[in-house]
Image (spheres, one colour):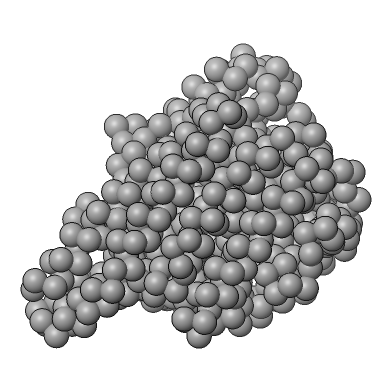
Length: 498
């Protein structure tokens, strides 16, 4: 199996380069001084070009065919070869100079975004975002020509292999049709109930951090292979066996940072749980961003906003912050964590209104890639969409189109995976609880072992062995859909049975 062995060695080298880029990317968002942005952009561009050159070596195409002809490939090896071909098809479609230019532009634009967001100054970002969009459109067109896709589907495929707008649009149309009445019904019900009492602060950052670390341990984060830091935009990154998550703190509120930590810990469990024998091969990577988001949302939304988990968390918070009175009771904490109210900031949104944020961003980014929406018109289109979908008047661009890092960083095609992940999370959590009735009682004791074990067996350890729907069917009995997610919302927020 000489050809296959050569390919595995090649992709192991690529994995090492990707890990190096991952650590540099983490440093860019957490520790790097602003004055180093141009140099860092060049470093990341060089690594991108090196990886691109290794991957697009024409001999690899010959090796794929030779490896197939060699035979003797087992289940994992055949899946690995499939994923190698997928990576090669994406990379070989894009010229190296375009890869470098897109990388440099995104790094530069990210740094400008930090200043523009802080000052609510879209004009400062606009020319840089226009350049990022121009280059990402070229990347999408090049990949689309090679893969037989339009530009947006080609970019989407890079984040969620096999996913297409034709699959997303009916699901999102169902959500768009159902959510307005659902949000209204939930808010009417909550208005008739006692309002949650705010937790009295302040909440020292160091105490918040210590609670976050404690919760990460409870969920199952391995601190021998990861760490927690601070960034402007929470994320999970780093490298193989060096998983780095971040959150952001607010001394006036403890709830946001803790849920941010739990969200990113869900991502980290997936990364830390990938099969060790395949860590440096394509088949050992996570199965796309929809499933990755399912893991973070399953931990944060399905498990850690449940009444059971709040029964565990409430005394922990009361003790840590010296709280007194009914505001610190589990019932009140659960009301706080399940309060539904339209808001401007996506990452702070409740799980009922959150999909509206994604519906808007999906609509805008598909229009931008298609050339139907210019960057100059983005703020107005964003604000109009917030008014239409959530009934909100955006006060400034900091609370509008400047709030997310994704477009400045070139991540066009990423946004739909958030809501697709929420749908998958509902399916997976339902199946896990059906298989292990002790999961919910365990959450009340801060015990995630049964849930973590089920996810490890049915999601994490399978990595990219299967396509997304294959994995979901194997784990839950059905392909990705909105039914279980909507049923979950009706149970949690409207008291529906079933």
